[in-house]
Image (cartoon, rainbow, N blue to C red):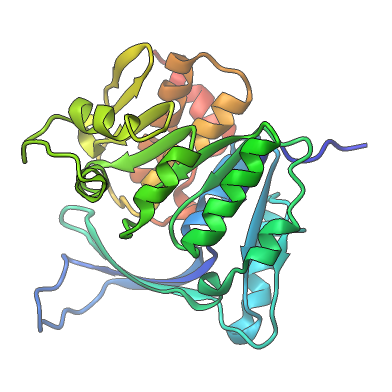
Length: 310
C-alpha cells in the first residue's frame, strides 16, 4: 500500500494570469505585451508542486471555489502528484486570482492578488486535518492568519515541524513566529517583519542581523533569501551563507516557492543542512532560468544533475 504524505502544505490556490512585457509599466503607462498565459498558481499550490516534482510525498490543504472553472485547478494539482483530499471545493465561491506582469529586461515582476476562496478557509477545516504520519507542515500568508496559527498549534502538538514562509508580508504575522520551527523570508519581508516585532535595527542591517532578530521571536531557524546574493541561514549553531549559482534570470516569479518546496523536500529526506540548502538553491536557480512559474519548476533528475557538476 502506498505510504501517505510526509509534507502537508496549507496554502493558497490561484489562477495566475501572467503577462510578459518588455519591462514593467510605469504608473499610467500602457505597454504592448509579448505573451499571455493562464495557469495554476498560488503560493500553496506552487510549493506543493515544487515538492512533488522533486519526489516528495506531499498533500495540499486549501479551499478552491468551483466558480470560474476552479475544478480544473484541483485536477492540475492531481496530475502533478499532489494529494488533494484536504482541498475543500465550495460551489458558490471563486478561486483566488493573481495578475502578474513580468518584464523581459530584468525578469522582475509586479503582482496583484485577489484572495477569493483562499480568504475564507475556516477554522473547522483546520480542525479536521489529520497530522498522523506527517513530518512537516508548510504555510504561507495568503490564507486567514487565524487558520494558519491554529494549524501550527495542532501540528506542534502532534510532533510535526512547522515552516512559515511569511509571504506576502501581512501586519499581524509576527504572532505566528513563536509557533514556527523554521521561518523563510526574503530580505524585504525580513525587514518588514522585524519592524512589526518592535525590534530596532539599523536601516542597513545585514541579513544575519535580521535573521537573528527574527529568531529571537521564536523560530528555531531563519532563512533569508537574497536573490542573486544567495541565502542566509541562522540557527543555534550560527550563520551559514549559501551563494547563488551563476545563472541568467529569465523569470523570477515562483523562485521563492521553488526554494521552499525544495528545502522541505530535502529536509524530509534527512539530508544534512548544508546539502539541503545547496539542493534548494540549485532548484531555485533552475526555475529562474526558465519562463513561467510551475512550468519552470525542475524535476528531481535536473537538480541532481546540476549538483553532480560540483
